[in-house]
Amino acid sequence: MRPLRDESMQLIVTSPPYNIGKAYEARQELEEYLIQQSQVISECVRLLSPHGSLCWQVGNHVGDGEVFPLDSLLYPIFKRHGLKLRNRIIWHFGHGLHCTKRFSGRYETILWFTKESDYVFNLDPVRVPAKYPGKKHFKGPKRGELSGNPLGKNPGDVWEIPNVKSNHVEKTIHPCQFPVELIERLVLAMTNPGDCVFDPYMGVGSAPVAALKHGRQAYGCDVVQEYVDIAWQRVHALRNGELRTREMGKPVYDPAKPNGGH
Image 1 (tube, rainbow, N blue to C red):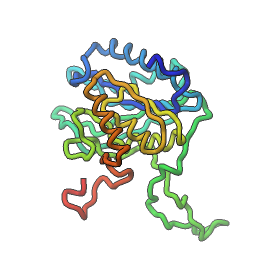
Image 2: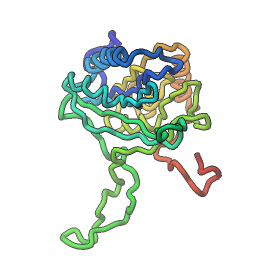
Image 3: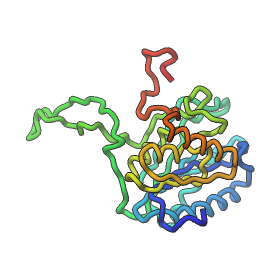
Image 4: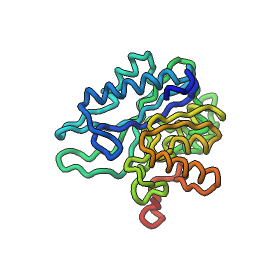
């Protein structure tokens, strides 16, 4: 990250290791993990544009059966840099580990921070279908007019997007792969065409793919060479029109299709 220019990134979006002993990380004491995260976050703040957004997607660290919510533990680090929290987005998914001594976890969080109060936010490209699209005002000066935006409604801060499991169209060898659709919504809302998007824990390149799909510039890094190689393969496949990704906004479950259309 150090060779990259100060304030050059409009959007920094990532999902760091959760310190739970996955193949791509060495498990540490929680305090050591937070120190390491603090160093990376500091570099991210340096790279972030004054009008940009930083999105940190995390779940829980679990030790001896106790849950430690990483978003709560990391929040003070971001605040020490003067960042402002705009949303705590809940990413809800339907599948994961089945717990026997607590309720099974089915969501993770995205902390969305900005440096300034003047930041890029484009709502129209990420609107979702309204529950009652033809609803109209029934009284008052707007009687008979549509009561909602014709482009759809604000998606809110709870997003239901499938995680990448074995039957997912985007699945690679990475055990905790970002769904491209999750990043697409952030890219469209928080950047403009031509802006730079960066992922400091890139993995197999879902964030760069999401950025490039929508005419942004993409940057990313990772310490596992095999993941970086796959990321390049996915980028080349995207440019050749050969990369398969889950359609943005596709219903999670369609009862009319076999197995719900997953």
